[in-house]
Amino acid sequence: SQQGEEDPQALSIQEGENATMNCSYKTSINNLQWYRQNSGRGLVHLILIRSNEREKHSGRLRVTLDTSKKSSSLLITASRAADTASYFCATDNSGGSNYKLTFGKGTLLTVNP
Amino acid sequence: SQTIHQWPATLVQPVGSPLSLECTVEGTSNPNLYWYRQAAGRGLQLLFYSVGIGQISSEVPQNLSASRPQDRQFILSSKKLLLSDSGFYLCAWSALAGETQYFGPGTRLLVL
Image (tube, rainbow over all chains, first blue to last red; front, side, top):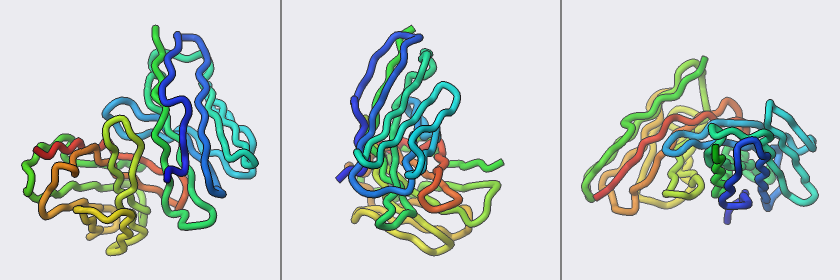
């Protein structure tokens, strides 16, 4: 089964609005990561948050992690048309082989100009 | 700086033909290497990962195999392609297990 599950599956907003995406996972983790994928391209790493961190910022990105609820959220503030992409969360598994990450199915964000 | 290359970018192959996709990494040593497949509109499925030359771990039983003949070279192969092998194949590397992965541009494979 999927370790990470993003919600919603698709999100459409106007430029300038904020976008919030959520991720839930099932097992204990060492860290959680968010990636972005433009259509037909490879994934680009956005931010990594460790299990002992609760919030992290990078530019217009804000990530929160609640290990008690096994959930994370990605907030993109003041969105731009160029933010249109799919966003994936990925988790390792602190109880198993941490060589690999397990990715969710992603949230497709569309920012309308 | 580190870079990762994949080729070809697009490939159309008949059912039953062989496959060889290549991935190379520059600017780092002893990377962990990964092959993923992404179906249209879906998440990533890990196919293989490698922690060193000649060391391959397979995640799902399938028609594909992987090899790592050199430290920074990772090859995905098949002897006979199936229709179900169509998809978007991504190679990635990481310096440390469970940490940030850096992805190549991907190869779109269409099996007809």
